[in-house]
Length: 128
Image (tube, rainbow, N blue to C red; front, side, top):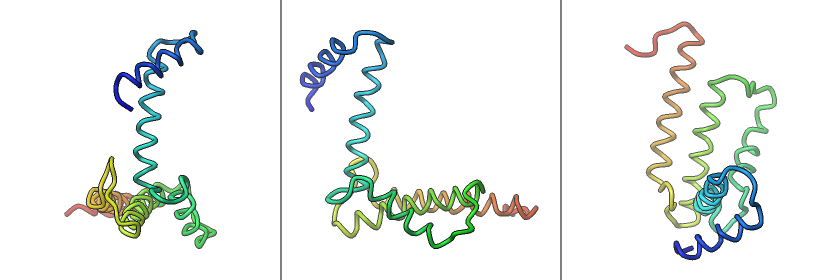
């Protein structure tokens, strides 16, 4: 939407929902915009919830996985980014919010965090 259109939408929403903090509607519209852009990145041409479903499908292979373990969480975050990169590559596009390279960079970061957490768990100093 162009700014004038967004202002019109905001005014309509304010009239319909007049109570509450004035910034709430602005934040909500910003979130709608971000959700739209990110969903385009994660699902362009596919299921809008596809990233969650694909990652969940992979995780089903590990029935005894402790989802409360911070190492697992770091790996899941990496997997989410890896899936996004693979989807973009398979569909032939770059993301609006983050491109393939940025997604892969996130994978690097999350895997390093997983290694650091594993080192802490094992009582090892993973930084030399």
